[in-house]
Image (cartoon, rainbow, N blue to C red):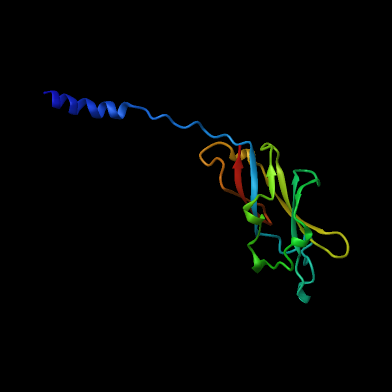
Length: 167
């Protein structure tokens, strides 16, 4: 009888014990380690080529990360690192920090940022190609919180950021 009682109560005791869940992690910063252009506007807002495509010239693309609604760069890719003559068939195009180090760290997750694309011009002003807006605070809760990458797609472009979330 003792064995039968033990057989009955042991599983009941075993399954009634709660395992302590680890405390949820709360990150306060995000590190951008890679930026990928998945899609970009093939033409400017007027419908023309960015450069003279008939002569084999295409946009020389670089990016800036800015506070939404401003032109103040939080990070600007050195123009020397631009993607020369980027055709649509070249996409996706990526930039990654050397040695796995971040090229941009945002220390305020409530700060909304734009990734602005530009076509470098050796003469005259660089042409603004468009932007994608990233609101990192939108990715800090829920079932898919703190993802390793975020992709934002607008009507003319799509940009993916690879991330490392930091405390």
